[in-house]
Length: 327
Ligand SMILES: [Zn+2]
Image 1: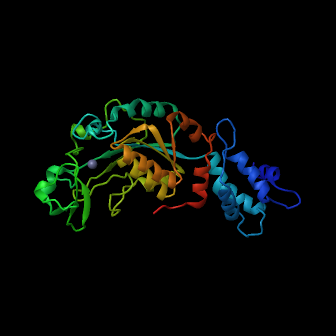
Image 2 (image 1 turned 45 degrees about the vertical axis):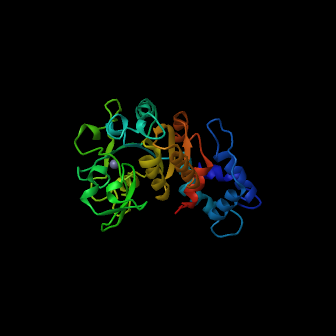
Image 3 (image 1 turned 180 degrees about the horizontal axis):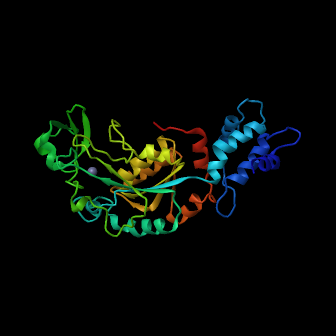
């Protein structure tokens, strides 16, 4: 297949792909599920050609084509995909930190039919479920604020600090923390995954926020990046190229997980209707940040085509080629 593709796209006189024939290859490669080519920015085309033309002679020769195929095209045609279902837990849906009481007024339980439908119909290579899993003396609980020395970021007297304010705990390590109601305390009803959420065979559970002194929004890292879960290690072990993220809350644990996924080099997809969030402003900011990191945000009805490699997005392809980090 590699040789046939090389022969199809190469220019016989040039003994390889010129910039023009490379453009033709991109138009055949990066298409939607109806085989319609996506628009690709000209600077991306130039950058990609320069990356794959490793000897800089302005031709992608047979050897360079094989490397490009093995390192890039192969994954675009046959990605290895993992779904991360973030924190679909009782406390965030109808318990102590139910997001429907937050500013955006969204209903957490609405993610469940969307996620169950995905789990029933999409051939993900692996499914992970994360759970916020706090000890009762956790630093993020408003009720625990007096257990540690802190100052308010707004200069308030400590006794006047309110729920949802952000404070700085002295530490060490010094820790900036938003104060939430008690939630997802280990082994309590609130920390359980919602009973209607489908759990698929051979899935993996990841627990986060398990240490008293530090919070963890991302399923990969704690908020200070001092320690990580084994999610990245497991994804690498499975050869996962593409990470799909959904769950609660879009602008907090889902968003932090998706941004970390991008920064760790995964092609990252946010399943928009499979998420619900806390604040409209922060939800929009999260989407913009993901956009800058070359993640894509899609409706769940697009996921099948992406996972099976029939919808091949330029953002994800470019991302893989450059492994761009947005710090
Ligand atoms: Zn938490």
